[in-house]
Image (cartoon, rainbow, N blue to C red; front, side):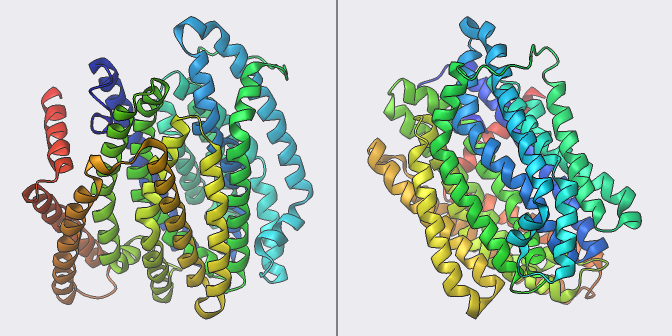
Length: 529
């Protein structure tokens, strides 16, 4: 994949080959993680449905993930990886382990303190998250929070290890960290759901966080890490300097997530569960396409920015955006057209009812309005990070949260939980458009990269694909029994294969460059194998 997003004119063949292997590993890890995530969500839907206790778990599980995103997630790409990569250079490798030891020690101490505070103030945190719940659900939410709290420490330490592995260009173990997390949840649910009910979900997150930490440790068997609290270490100061702007922006973003959950809890006990089910389906193409392409292009963009090679920078970013749009447009259309049979296939089992399916489909389609913008936003953010500018994305993030709050408060009463979904899509639209304008001014535009023309051809092919698949599904569904799992499987499989064929042929006939590049890359890899 990275062969398509690097800048051959500005990088060596060896570097391009390394980048290709790294992107392939990341993509495989993403696919594995998303597949296990779907298994996890299917099990939850089958065993527990979209009920109040599941909504309580959804809100409780946001806390460790929220803290991870706030302290580690944003720090990885914006601060940890750039700083540790500098120390990982051959001439500075001896300084790497002392620097990593300081960062790990300080962050571990901070995370341990947060775990203690979360255990002590769980009732207050529960009210902030789910103030609209009845007392029984609030009490359950509090107990779930206390089970989940230690996961904050394990996920955080795993995140630091991931940053160190990325800096060392060891991508395999970080790529499969999320897969280990989801696998831990799946195994725990299967073994314990019948005994401890919804508590098995919280315990699963705890086990999954241990799994994610363990798999990162396997990649650092040669690490020479020691407890160290050298507060004056230059690595710690540099990470703090780079992180402060993005951290401030992420605090605002996490406040938005908290408000979103609180407002959703006031629209009914099932709303949070419905929104999470829809989000799960959105995350699959977003993670596989946007995240993989952004991570694959970041090293090249960083090198080109340091060298002030802005022509190469624009070419690399333009190729990344064209490839992203080529992949995300058909994914968006396909999810829209096949939303109902796909939700039925994945979720409508056991305690999950047909009315839950209808609610999830409605949310999914409104989330899809913002998917393309959310996907495009990733490489735009990384383009600024490559220039060591974390302030601009953070500032735009604050503005987009303001857009969300205005839209959410305006739409909540007339649309209920769907108003919150639409507000979220509006936020992604605002953020991506503002970032695009600012980047255009920063680097002198992307007009010579053919992005709009490539996007128009890909969009035309995706529209044709959507119409043909929709018509075909009407015929297929009319000939199959209603409510049968195998029938939904046939519909989704047939629709997916038809979509691939139509879109592939249409983009080749329209001479979309990315179609030829992907095909050529696949042929080369098959020949090598």
